[in-house]
Amino acid sequence: MRQFVVLGLGIFGSSIAIALYEQGFTVLGVDIEEEPVKELVGKITEVVQADTTDEKVLEALGVRNFDVGIVGIGNDIQSSVLTTLAVKELGMPLVIARAINEMHGKILTKIGADQVIFPEQDTAIRLAKTLAFPYAVRGEELFPGYNIIEVQAPPSLYGLTLAKAQLRTRYGITVIAIKRGENYIVSPNATETLLKGDVIYILGSEQQLKKFFREMAEIKNGKVKVEE
Image (tube, rainbow, N blue to C red; front, side):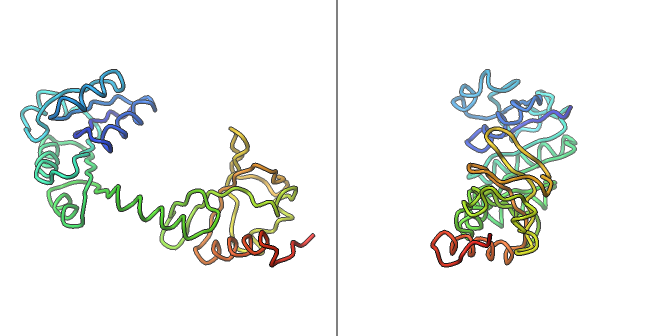
């Protein structure tokens, strides 16, 4: 099983460290400040107060034995860069580093980060995409131009099987899962009936999804009559 070291235990670093630990992974957390270290005691496998920019310190902690290093340091770009460089020098197989802007990201890539992420920017983009679709609960871009959207099943679809709803024929979208209470129906078949309270996960292009949501809004407002 993969072992993770999270370097920098701010909101982002501590959140991902806890999430990985709760999934059953071994997680070492390291931060130069005492407070975030104290906060994580007992919440992950091990947490240590140490200078993440010091390669010798990281080597003494056995960081080179971990499979994945996550550099969660954000606003202190110098510490972020030096920490990323240190874990790469120790031969870390996979280093994922957080960046706060494009220049920061370019530097991290140049010094060897295997993957650079922009949490704030990515969150803003996801929110914008969700807001673009009325009544959507959450949206995620699967690949350019195509999204998976989580939405409460519209009342106009209650009691209809997926075959009768004809979402693929009418809009080009596909229901890839249904959440019913605490249970998930993944890849539902055409005979599955949509019920009040269901949450559906639909996949389609932005144009297809906008057409679906636009018509659902019109049905809700009484502008379009539902076909029996």
